[in-house]
Image 1: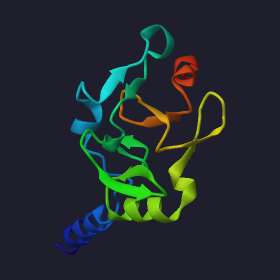
Image 2: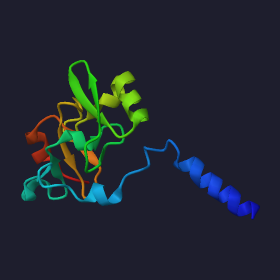
Image 3: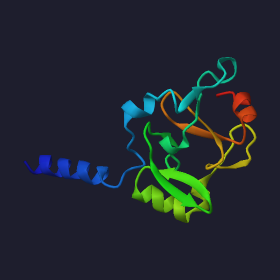
Image 4: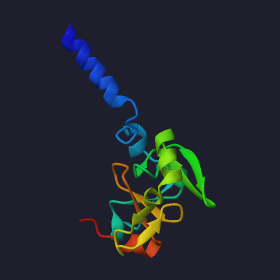
Length: 137
């Protein structure tokens, strides 16, 4: 009985505040056609461009499939999936930037071209030309 209690308590503790690990798998894999556009198949068949950045948690770099919490910072719009992500976006400039996987240059997530993998992970590109040049490893 005690083992079951502790196992249940451990699962609850792991689940509380762990938005980084939580993704609704049904929504991360299915994208509404209005918010995700397929990238040119001959160039990047494993990525699809995300046309609605509000459906991306920019802290977890994950496509969530539904609108996230708007976090306006210095006139730009960022999005987070929970209050913890909202706070990180407001306070940490490093969370608001990513590295373009093609050029290696820093990209502001609010203005980046965003593309998602088949499992909902997102990458940030400085331009559509950079997205088209991407070759998955």
